[in-house]
Image 1 (spheres, helix red, strand yellow):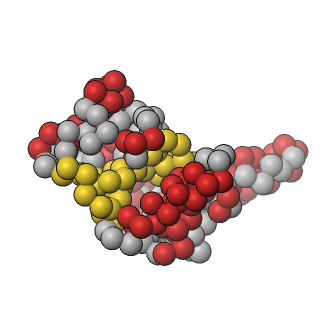
Image 2: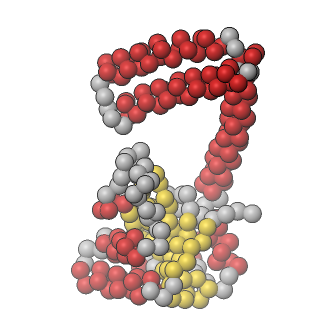
Image 3: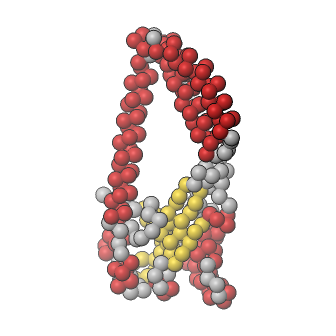
Length: 240
């Protein structure tokens, strides 16, 4: 039974690896289709031979890894389904900018020194959690940044293209949207808002970088950096 179980698991891993390698050759390495076809054909010729052999031993214990794989498939499907539904809820419950602008520059609260990073999966619009925050707490930071982290199918993202920043509303609202873009180099690539001085300084510079007037840009950057050294806090949009 142990040999049948191990054999089934190993062969399935070999097949999955071949299919993933084919996708990498096509989408990442952009190899010629003939080279991809040769690699896939030779690999499947060997692996399908092994796979056909282990199919005869499914009733001898080979069913164990299949049951485990099916259980993990159900778990991952439920997780993916919940993630999609949560994103759809955030998309349909976004707060309109007209409502935000109607609150005035103070947003109806006391603006205290500091930068508040509101994490959201939305790349546009104001998340619903923000309206809950400003209607239940008496104060908010003088600068509010809606942060959205996106992972791109590339190895790494250069520092010049890592942060996409734009202002939200009039200048005196001091509200920004920052889309932080990451590559798939997880070993050497830190989180865009990991708390390191270099990452924070780069993000704050990007906030003022789109201002064309040099003197206005310097004043805006000085204001942001002054807030940064006072306090830095995050708010996560987790619905309960």
